[in-house]
Image (cartoon, rainbow, N blue to C red; front, side, top):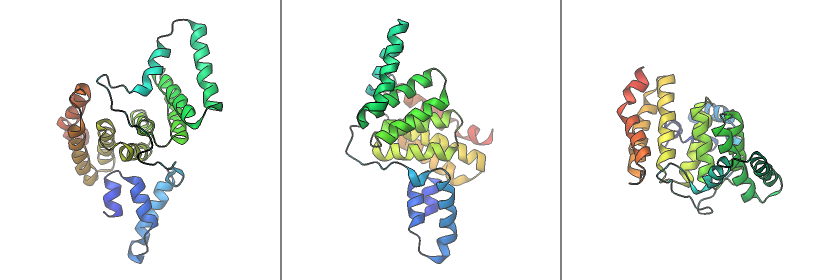
Length: 233
């Protein structure tokens, strides 16, 4: 695939890496353009992820993951003092825990901020979770999804979603979110290749959906049914 192919398919890290390998004089100008663009979005300093290191859990029928169970538990606490104690415990673990423990603490804090509608803090925590444990697809994916939903630049969201899909290529949610960002880019920039790749990605997302993931399947199908209105509205 070419740099353009990667770029229009939302595989921005692959585009960045391909651009850095260009030696052909005829392609150097385009390569430099991609390098400059993507380095503005910190692609040069992304944490390095490795396949096969972490278990990538399957999304459950209620759209949750096992990693979110602590969030449910904490949100169910009625006693204010106990709630404060648990939050303090999370913050302490984020400071002195192992990288694995720090990552899970930041993820939990990120979800709690998300429920409280503090989106900047939420994204910050998810990015810290990625930094501590870059091998967990969920951390990359939830960061990218949150970025897309709450006003970050599309290239920020795509970068994180790309890594989530790399680590967990059968996860329908991350593919669906990737397609949503590609649709946004097609609408904003009026570039057809983004839309063509969004359509392919939606098909892949639908195929990856488990039988138990009814609400996610419906959301993906709804996106497919309304693609034209997203672009031309």
